Length: 425
Image (cartoon, rainbow, N blue to C red; front, side, top):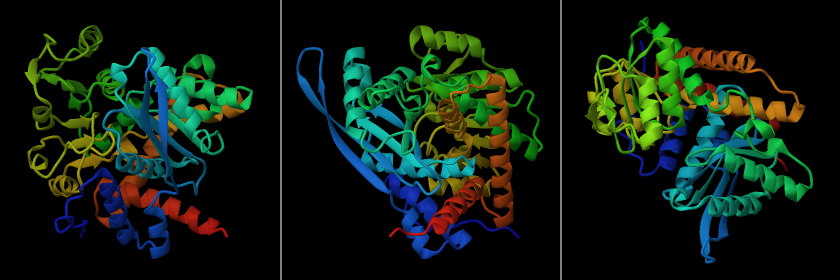
């Protein structure tokens, strides 16, 4: 007999932070987590809010607000991206930091979770203004980051170039080069081979495992991808090379669909030329809402949070949902998908390839010994497939969905480290 967590009686969370806490609460009850450790893990260790004065190209000074949240460091230094976006909120950054804790623990790398963000519109800023913003923000948070303390990385609208500016700013303060302070850097200054495709490649590995577990054929399996940024674009390319058939893709402006399969190389070229997949001649127009509900075998939400809800979950036709984005599925939708027999590969599993190769980059920087890409991909596959199997074992053991199984693995690991370390003083 299987059981599932009843979320129907739980009020829908009002923010991603409340959603993240609710997910922890559900798992704490399931695994019998002690009240003290549960409360310890329910709140971030440290929250830093900074003002970021920036000199603009016209000589004016603008003040931006930035955040760095460190959720937990029981298993090692904290790790997490920095996003530049007009809709950044402290609640969002806290939730993302908590998810990073579970993500690192699930793939069993020695990091805790952190996240950062600046409320800004990088699309409206020049390169010089972005550099000024990045260097000032780095200076403001430099009191809590470092290769042994907290290692930032790219996230929404931040790039390898921005990571290079962070590394340089931090290194100038210390008086010598410290490449290990950030990951996602350009190769020339200590970046890792394979990092640009790591999130998508990790997602591919766990989708492969899910298809094999569910005894579904990979060759010709239909895939729909919402979001055509770094993760979505590379996922489409890698999955097509693997034998999947990409039938629909979209970005913030809209999407295209072709039941016979889309020309992925053509779409990538069209996106690079026009800035969007919209208008690609090899498919019919489709909205982001319609893409989520289209006829496919694998759905990959690779864009924003909270797109799969109680309203559209009953209409989703995919057999596997692989969350390349953070937090795309609301808790009440999780329950619906699980009841319908749809396997959801949760974000802390499906998009953990990025932080895993970030960990490899950090190790290479500290050792000053860099690996070949084939070795990196082999190590990544080992981490991702093991994490899938451990997640699936926990889900089967407790009779719950894959997200709860993943949380059970991750939370138990963080709780064990927390208990072993104890409280100081």
